[in-house]
Image (cartoon, rainbow, N blue to C red):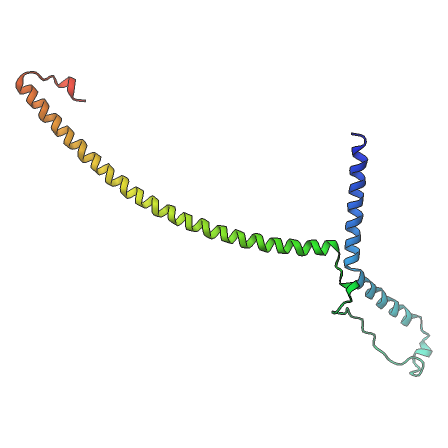
Length: 162
């Protein structure tokens, strides 16, 4: 147990450092451009006001700093974190398409179940009405048998009737 804790802590430290490196690597180019712009502003602030007015020494200029869209191959490496984000987006799209497929299949099954359910309800009501008809006929026949037994002097109503 005492050996396990330092190994876990070292692993956590490595993971935190790797994550920090990935975050810094993702914004490295933008930070470099921002620092370059700050340096240009500092250089402008250090100029002598009298010399700045001389257009031969300090011509009016405009510095434009922008991020190149066509990055070099070294610059195009986005890092592990960005690759993981892209993979997560791909997996999310796949999962969403599979979920929509499953949902459509579920709706199809639900409609089939409702059709079967309504058919079964119809069949059950038909069977129930037939049972009721048979029960009425049986009671009528039992009444006739009881009447015949009573006429013959052999019937005891309490024995046969429910």
